[in-house]
Length: 158
Length: 198
Picture 1 (tube, helix red, strand yellow):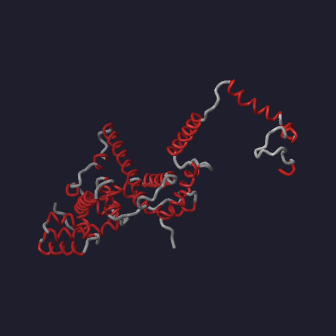
Picture 2 (cartoon, one colour; picture 1 turned 135 degrees about the vertical axis):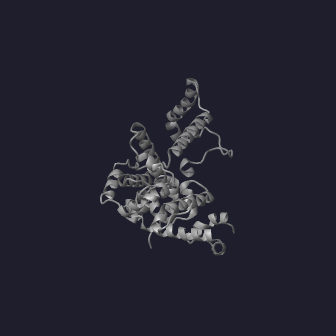
């Protein structure tokens, strides 16, 4: 190790974080180099002197002031957990809109009034014929699938 | 067993005010020590510490434990302190331009070698105690060197943490620390009863 390389190792040697190999290399160098030995001694002096620097203590009102400032901060809405970030909320809204738009496009919906009437009228007729359907005699006019002359009584079919 | 900083911060994120109080109790004093040594004015140091905690509180919603909490906290504190120191220096420069007779700004901008040239150093030592002398030596360091030394010496942060807080590489940090301690060696030489040799 030379004097320039010492610079890179000196701080970790002084603060005690140097590895065993680094410490050995520094100690071997300062044994042979008086200038670096003197510098290491002075750095140790600086390290110790810094312990004497005064430290500012928090004022008694520090916490109270901070609590006041925090109380003045806007609180999260109750549904805030649903919306972790504005970007995600925007993405979710865009996805919902896209889904609705695609859904509307895919439905084969009638577009004209006549088409709508064509769908509605048979339904209305079915409703009007409900009483007729309830009358089982009317069903007797229909042929039976197995070719029997008479349909079975309604109660037996039920 | 005490909850870790990250556990407390996740508690704050979930809306637990007691977790925030615990973080405040844990870091109030270290932060004020750090900021008190970063800036000259104690009132400004306390205001900055308040701002750090306020920013932590505001950031709770998006908090993700990706970095060590201490590193994140000191990164916020360092950035606030560096901005405050620079603003103050610019303000003093403006005052100095307007009032050429005011020597305060010039004193702040003295190069580090002024320890040898500053008159009356012995008298100054007599008038002020060692602690104040050391504090002034720290304050004369360039801001980034000062922040590095404070985190390294007083808060025992790892090199990688300090480098992350200062947004530099670990090798750049070691070089920064060497220059800072070298400057302090020069500044504090009178305390050791000898004149430092450049």
